[in-house]
Structures are given as C-alpha cells and as structure tokens.
Image (cartoon, rainbow, N blue to C red; front, side, top):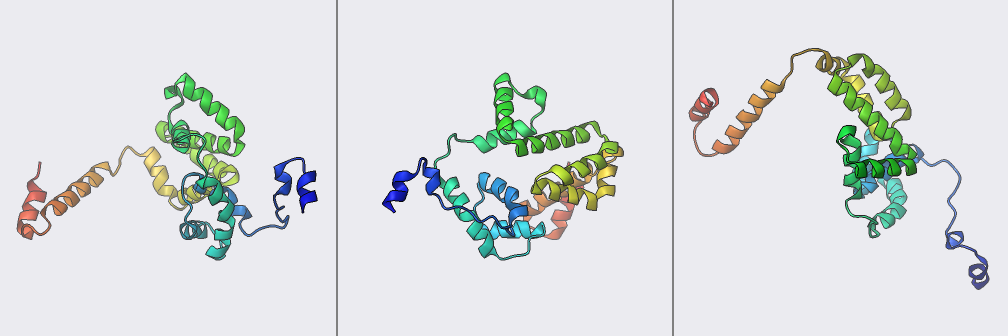
Length: 210
C-alpha cells in the first residue's frame, strides 16, 4: 500500500476507476448533472423527473449516481451566483449584454460545448417567439430533439403534443391574455373575501369591480 502511494505521479491515479459498461443512467446523466449544478440534490425528486422522461429504474440507482455529485456540489463554490449569472447570459437579448458579460459568456461557452448548444437553441427559440416565425418552429423542434439536453428534448416533446396551440399562438393576433387577467382578478377577490361575506356580495364585486 505504501509503495503504491509512493509511486504515483498524481493524486488522480489513486482514485478508483469507473466501470466501462453502459449504465442505466447514461442517457440521463447530462440532465442530472445539470440539475445538481442548479442546486437540486434530492434523489427522490430527480428520480420523479427522469421517470417522466422515460427512466425505468429505482431511486436507489439514482442515489448511488448522485453521491459523488453531491460531494462536489457541497464543496465551496468557486464563485457565488455563478449559475444565476450564466442563466442570465443565456436568456438575455444579446444586444443587452455588456462587454464584460459578453466576454464572460463567450469564455464560459468555450469551456462547455454542451451548454453552448443549449445556449444557441434557447436563443433561436426566443427569436422565433419574438419574431413570430411559426414556419421555423418544426425545424427548431427537430434540432432540439437531436442536439438538445434532456430538459430541452422534454420541452420539444411538449411542443409537439400541443403543436396546433403553439402554432396558433405564433400566427393569430388573438390571445388569452384578457381572459387570464379576469381569472386572476376573480381569484384575488375570492381570496380577499373568503370567510367574510356571502356569495351575493362576491357576485357584485366580480360584476362591478373596475
């Protein structure tokens, strides 16, 4: 044992090697790593999430996979707020990034090719939504399902299930904003009056409120 420690050139040589066989979690590994990096280390919650994506195994398998990731996650972060900062870079309009943000964003993506793909897909989808380019939606869905992270592939699958609704939202001038606003107002009135007055007064407030 002492000889083994004396002969190694690097501490990494002392770490146990991982098995080379295919794991049941290989397909979901990028998604789990992304969620752990975002702060979620609850094995039960993560098991439920990947089960919705098609995973068919026990939480025990997920828990074993998460053990080294938890240890790394619990270590002091190199820079506070890093995840939130990167999320802001990905979701903000490019023309609203400062020169410092742009430099940090480009350097970060250069070190993370997988996240660079996610960034391009997120930005392209935002442009489709803002410019209402419904004719580009199917092509984007195809790219997301081929190249995207598990979370983006799940999002793309949801778009396919509601494709008619999504397409209508990108093409028609009508929307449900007014209806949603009225529903929100009625819920607020119900919360304000719960246990205080009768249905008749609630009805009057709903009908006559400004």
